[in-house]
Image 1 (tube, rainbow, N blue to C red):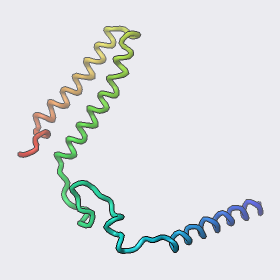
Image 2 (cartoon, rainbow, N blue to C red):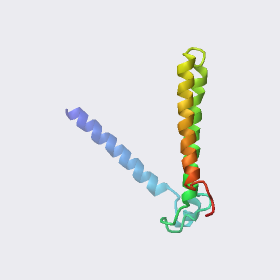
Image 3 (cartoon, helix red, strand yellow):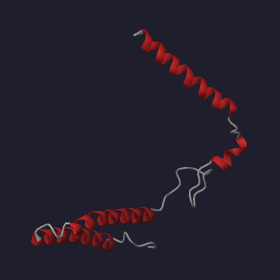
Image 4 (cartoon, rainbow, N blue to C red):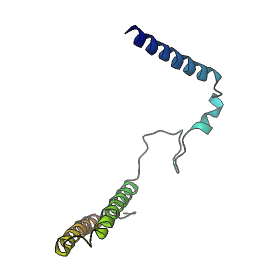
Length: 117
């Protein structure tokens, strides 16, 4: 038990001393604030973080993810076409695509795809 405690305390002392050494040696200064700030296209990193975000951009991103996942689901189904029952396979594909088309129609009908209103 004593060996375990000594090993843990020795490891903690080494890691703490290395962290303190890194903070002492590091060349970070206040002048590097601009350089070290994250860059997001179109957003000023020094402004307030609670700026209004475009809801249309978010909806288009969600649509892209949904249809990207659709492709990931449809591709393996095409590979299984040879080994599965054709009636079961076609009904599954038809239902899957119909659900996606109905969702797209719903978003189109409610005006979620319009950029300017």
